[in-house]
Length: 264
Image (cartoon, rainbow, N blue to C red; front, side):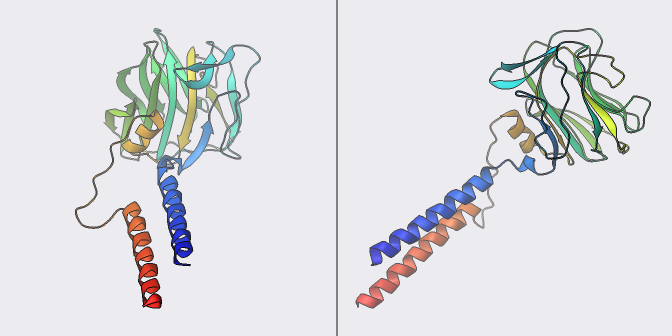
């Protein structure tokens, strides 16, 4: 009888431990995700109701680059979404994988609204250098070159005070700037092109994400597939997993103690 009770308790403890471990393993960056175009085989937005991209019949192809499925864009291809009901305000993260070739001039990676609208913003490359623009924030230039025919994970975060530019999970540039991107209802968004159909990008884009918060560096590393060093635990106190293990051990000890009292 004791053997069965012990096995059941141990099994329950293991189930709890595995469940909690899986929960902890879920990327914390998934919180606040307001648009996510994987771009693996179509323009579907995995966030319900956030809006799919409409793809042209020509000028795009789905490919796999360094293990990442995404879309290869020919310069000038029109990839758009009308009535994108998302506003990024003063707290946001825009992240994606990008591979481009050397090019002199401007290339749009992702943009909302027309340039003459206050709600407009754009993630763009200026001769291969990563930049962000919004009328209320101005031109934010990172000085980071990524058009080297290599796949890069890029992310731009803003918390109302600082704009951070990440490449490969590393914070490469911080620009102090206060402000907010103005709201706009019913605006179009474009991939690889301005809404005015100018400054086309030619290259590969994958896993485009938009968040309504500024992700931290570990969140960005997770998106980029970079190994994260575990945060040191305080000298006092136990981690959640340690508490679970300790709880299971105590429970097993209690059962064993009760069994001994019964047989005594």
